[in-house]
Amino acid sequence: MVWNDALAARKTARKAGLPYIGDAEIQRLVLTQAKRTPERAWLAEVSSVVLQQSVRDLNTAYRNFFDSVSGRRRGPKMGLPVFKSRHDHRQAVRFNANAFALTGEGRLYLAKIGQVEVRWSRQLPAAPSSVTVIKDPAGRYFASFVIEVPEAGQLLPEIDTEVGIDLGLTHYAILSTGEKIANPRWLRRREKKLTRLQRELSRKQKGSKNRDKARLKVARQHAKVADARHDFLHQMSTSIIRENQTVCLETLSVRGLARGRLAKAVHEVSWGTFARLMQDKTARYGRTLVKIGRHFPSSQLCPCCGWTIGKLALEVRAWDCPSCGEHHDRDVAAAINILAEGLRSITTTGSTVAAGLAGHGINDCGGQVRPGAAIPTLAQPATYDAQTA
Image (cartoon, rainbow, N blue to C red):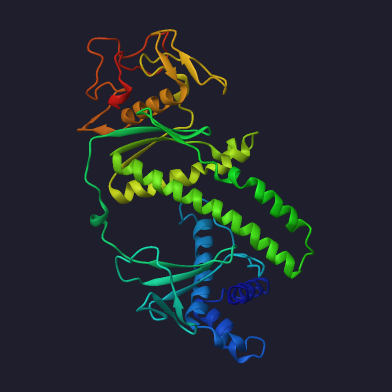
């Protein structure tokens, strides 16, 4: 309500040709004066901290928009703030350090609310500066704390292992070591039950209490799918980062892939979330993440001699190199090529790594490093061992 009142005041002033309303003035209009009116007198029953924070969020959104238009802000263009719907089933409020406190027996004190019993997922490593209470569409409440921890305490000890990752649908991830991580397909496991619940929801009268109950059942099933998927992605990304110093990952056009007949399967695996987790965790734990361009033909190259086989149909999962005669698993070969390309593009010991694994301690020992006219792309050592990578 406060967000919408503040946004309406700014839009009204803009249409009337009045000057831009400052932050202090907009807060006085939608909070101090509004509480004195019969229509908004109930705002006094809520902590003023969360109301003021809502106004600050609106002011930040406006500044981001102006900075984006003027070019002072990098990244995608930001749009004007929009009104929030009361029918939005995900809501959140934020309390600063003066409006909450941690008490004994696992309880959380919130201003104007009182003691709230909390089931802790982990111990806080430092004193929090703010807490955001979130209600998700499934009707669950979460308390998210903001804490500050030293970066040096999160760095992992350096190791000398590297890995390339090829993402897929049959297997979620294929590593250059030959390991294949299965795709759990969390949505497909609950698809039958979701279909039944969504059919029941569509038969309920809009605005009725039975429809709200049916919507909550659907939301809880989707929440279980999302929780299982996030837990799987966190565990897998953390395991990979702990075991490898350098991680080479291919960049996929998820939006483009989601337009085809495999759209449902592409959305289910959440490749974008996995890439974001890998980027955040490598920066946090002192690891190196190398992203390979989406146009790199990782599945078309022989990891032994660099021969280009050309575009392969999706049903072809293994192929024999016509140049060196090696038999390759398509996904494992792609992961090895991704690792080689990633090592080629970074600098180690003061020098840039050459094509493939040349110059990285596994040289060809007199063989042809650069391919000739018949081998137009990547060159790899003839005696390359996948386990070495």
